[in-house]
Length: 177
Image (tube, rainbow, N blue to C red):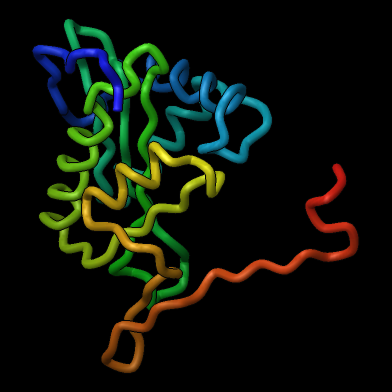
């Protein structure tokens, strides 16, 4: 738990075109220094604009957290998988500017995102967390009611979960590729 006080005035709102530059900067830092994204090179601002447009045009929420006019984090939901049985399931993503981590902003973003997803008729949300040692993200999601499972879809009139399993091939993860 951080000893930094939470910011006094955090505003959560829909991500607009004018927020994309700040979102791009936050994401670039995470790509280069974190494990939440498995991208190697940060995408351009143009690419991030297109990604945002793709998400909002499909009626998924894309939110930013602002403090004193500065974008300090963002979160969005996106389709979990393209098959029709997953149409009621979203995947969430949440990223913070590193200077603002540990102040409860991620939790505020996630609460707002969960409410938006429910309001849009989504029924399940999945968090795919990079690095099993990412205790902060795992703890945040657990505290919001997430539990460790596989993905979930709706088929044959019932909810069906899936199990994520992994197996090493050859040297597996004992040596670099």
